[in-house]
Image: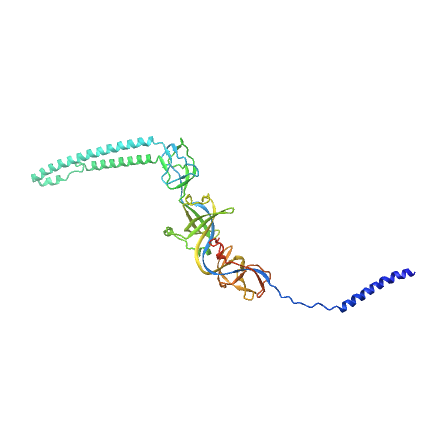
Length: 417
């Protein structure tokens, strides 16, 4: 019985003594002093801005197509006896260079026959002219005798008949000579046409001619396109067109258009060709409501201008950058630094956030050109902040250089907002 009581009392005493000790310690301990911590501010990256003059660059896309193309059509019929080695798809020819030749023997004989007919016609003309001179001399002698006789009726007989003086005969003989001359020229022209030549500097697109094949006049045996100039049709919006000075109308197509740059991206490599805006097509696309302009690239196959082993080819889908009007005193910031399309965050003199309304004149996928609301020398916040409010304290992690000093000349353009 005694042991049972002890087992119950001892734990109770231990708990009671522990509670008493905790109370004594807690009642004699003083609280720690309160320390007020100042907020350190949000950590941000900034960019120091400067005003500058920049030319608007409009970016578009288009497919390369030929400016000149023609069907290869022989003008005479015959058997093909020679074909130029480069007369294959992709072969290139200079203007006037032979493509293929047609058998000449029939046309050479035709030239000889036409030449003989021409000489015969000339002989007949000379004979009639001689007869006409003799007839004129005889008539003049006869008319003088009649006049001296003094008969008034003789004057009525002094008007000679055209046939007597060989007038119609002369006209007929001269017409025969002209016809024979034309026949000879036609025969010579057909002979010359047995050699089919390139009408302009070109590349073969399709061909279906081999030596020994019989070709007929007027039937197409291939296609070619001019290589001096290639064209790219670029659709642009009305807003983009306002920044460009594009020649409009046939009377202005000979004027020098604005500069352009054609780019082809292949993996990490970029190939470029200089071009010019040649004209507007003068119509609006019914689907996209876009205006189409034509960019020309001259001498794209010029081997003297290295292109890292590649050439501009038909069917390529390329980027085109059109250099337009100049904007003065604009401030260029990254697209991500424009907040809600109408404000920019600045770092104030006290290191606090200032939300500044702005207006911009031009925007691309990467940049925004601010026309009003900012001044050179200010620091623009690049970092995105959740719950940003006016006056928020900031810590600057680093200040980046202005965009115009980084990769100068590498403006990729874009659509205007």
